Length: 297
Length: 297
Image (cartoon, rainbow over all chains, first blue to last red; front, side, top):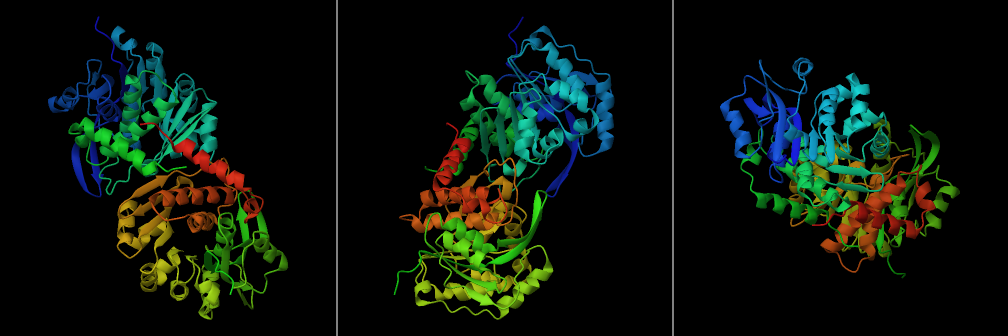
């Protein structure tokens, strides 16, 4: 048996139709597992468990292959899998797809030490989580599940180490308008840490003992925000998966690497920018974060 | 002749009526010059030029006196001066008051090396600015002037060193949705630097050569946001007024001290929290900013 992927992600891979103020693309490869894995692949080996529609082409596969991402675990589904988080229609589609999706992970996948449960139905996230003997498990979620599957979601949150969530969803999940209190409340639900993604305002990181916050990278244009949160998660988890240990120092760095990857991701459609990103550009932007947040005591 | 106040502020002092989710206060001392000067008084000697209504009491004066703030330059106006930036009515009042307000500064005030033009009619800001032979001049403004007195405002912005402005107003002034581009555009209007106040998201600082950003202090409750921007400006200018020189190091620290003072100000009504603030609490919170924004390379 070959060695396990250090980092495994379960989530969606989809063909998006995107329209931004800067242009439109009819067939844009997207989905949380795509954005996550391409981002994480700069730091660590990555394996993907996803459901894909039969509209998935050889060219789409190539995007994963060129980044060395293992898609052997990916399940094919007969149907188109358009994905747009803003429409209830697509959520119905997603529910239909995942209703029949009962992933049995391979023995190799089950040994992955790092696991990311991207934004899918929380019961399904838990099914995957229970199969993997991981050292560190993180998850994302969204308002749709907070509103429609709260109990299942809370059960899943209780069995992960880290919740990555956006600002508005953190408040909604905790039913608390103040973000700091919301995050503290989420910490009582089970996870050891909460990473709050705040888009153009940066990110905040909470544990019971520590608080860390960073502004976002100052971008003069945000071309396409799709996948920002997932590429953030990819940088965060990818960095941790290759770190020697997980402590406050590495976790803070991971938040910065997440912010770096998200800032590149939004510069172009789909993962176009990340496909031609060079590792030295990541290092350079990481150092820029240090420069623009540093002050002397 | 006595020595000039190191820091002079011109702006409003007013009796607010405040209603927040946490309570209401019928008669709350407020106005930009009040919040600014109380905040700045922790760092530097401060003089205030303001117009006050005849509803201003001995008790109100006491707030300035106990902080050692020089109000000798303050002009009394016959009438009530309720102040609520959210109502057009009060803006009319403000316009009426300032229409007759032609401040002639004393020789002492004219020598103040640091000058802050709080949010008042931009033509009036310029009249004051032209009388003061200051080393460093900063100003604030708001959407009302951006929309209603744009040309006058641009003339005033052209003759200051720093513009302190909130997020939405920076975008509106520059007519540019992206904040980074908006700030760069404002830098072409004259000032050497722009400080963008982002409320609970912190602050960003732009010069032609440098960029600095900080998250806000993580507050579990914001009791009353009134005056947050002005107490920020007070910490920023107060710190600079006592610094040996103005360079990138001191300016970044000034942004943090501004953030510290704003975070205290919003903890209670009016300037209640600042009235009983101790200098060591400021130092402690400054160090907390360092802790929660620090990461290792």
